[in-house]
Length: 107
Image (cartoon, rainbow, N blue to C red; front, side):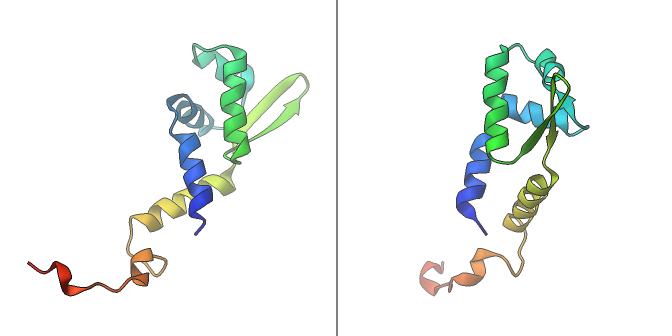
């Protein structure tokens, strides 16, 4: 498991506006102008948030004419969800299998 990369993803996701952007995009692709209508921020501020999400491959973008379209990157979101599931579920991938429990903490 790539803890370094996942911690960087979680850092990007820790912003309220970025979480709202992800929520908006969970219904499908949107153009930047439609995303901007939802927020009380300037276009440069929205661009900053989108760059953060794109840099971590959480969001993809493409041009359609003069519009910039954004969508969730399903590969990254699925990988992140799998990590969260593994983190909270005892499995063969669980890190706790790598330690030996000692009896020093007996009550």
